[in-house]
Image (cartoon, rainbow, N blue to C red):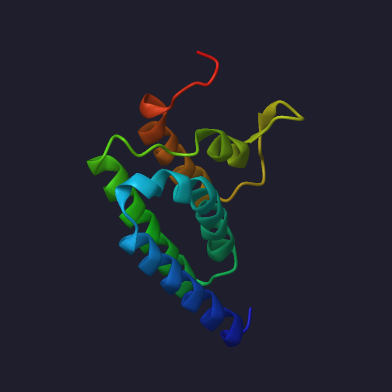
Length: 122
């Protein structure tokens, strides 16, 4: 990965971090529905490509999200999307090629989000 690619990725992550910090809690659930699975995937990719600065930036954003979610139980997390990162529904098994960072943080967000998950079937 080139330095230009890393710089562009870091710039993009800085914008994401800023927008996330400026968003109010009422809108955070809808933002996280798209953002969190993408961040968890990017975290694993950055780790596997030895992109330490990108990885650190993603970890900073994930830490911010985790703190905000822990302080406000009204914020829901995209449980189904996180499960899709971990589990291959077509093979009915856990994904084998998952990066450990993605797996560990996905499990942490599942643990945080499952108690507040609203099942549409109930």
